[in-house]
Image 1 (cartoon, rainbow, N blue to C red):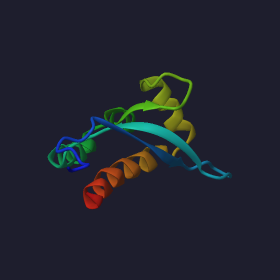
Image 2: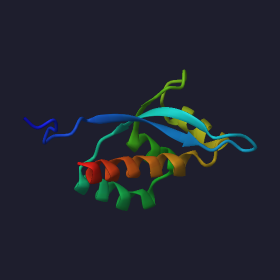
Image 3: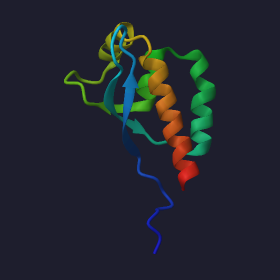
Length: 103
């Protein structure tokens, strides 16, 4: 019997390496929203008109910070750790694509 379901779980959790100026990157666990191949393509195309905060919240459904995940806390994170938006986006897309390659 197959160990793989035809329908993927709606979320997945991985660590994102957040760059820290003058220090070592910090691994932060984030829960991402799963997307199908066509949904991922649509998401990527739609990012051009969205802010980093909006894009972040469309990818991430949970995180290990004590603060609640909301636009204000995401804005604070992105303002203080400028590489976070790109690191999160890359991790998200890589995980979805790598999952497809592994399966």
